[in-house]
Image (cartoon, rainbow, N blue to C red; front, top):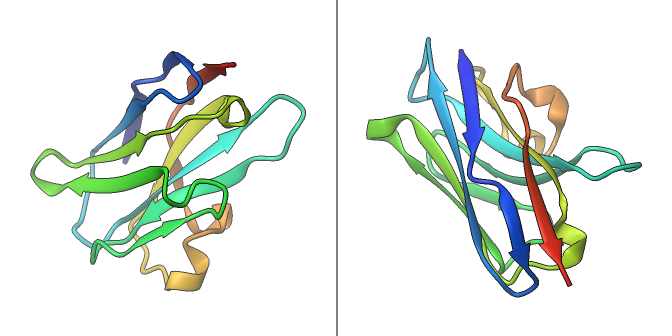
Length: 125
């Protein structure tokens, strides 16, 4: 399984960015995909996740501002990021797994087996 993340860039505070994660190789409708981010000097943290049944999960810090969705026909997972804040600045990674993931584990990086390269999002104040 290969993941290709794209869509990052420089945006002003209050603006929007849409990230895309293209999943290729061995794929399955049972896969779960998540977005994580890591800012300089900080730990990697969960941002959003979507399971095979389209149930969605968000970190409290992005709830109401970010939306994760899936386009099964294109094997693509999108992360729409609105009302961006300077503290959203980070390298964003998408990750996926073909294993069955229970809802409480969606937030854990250890639940994911495949990781894409990061895409940088910089929010200026």
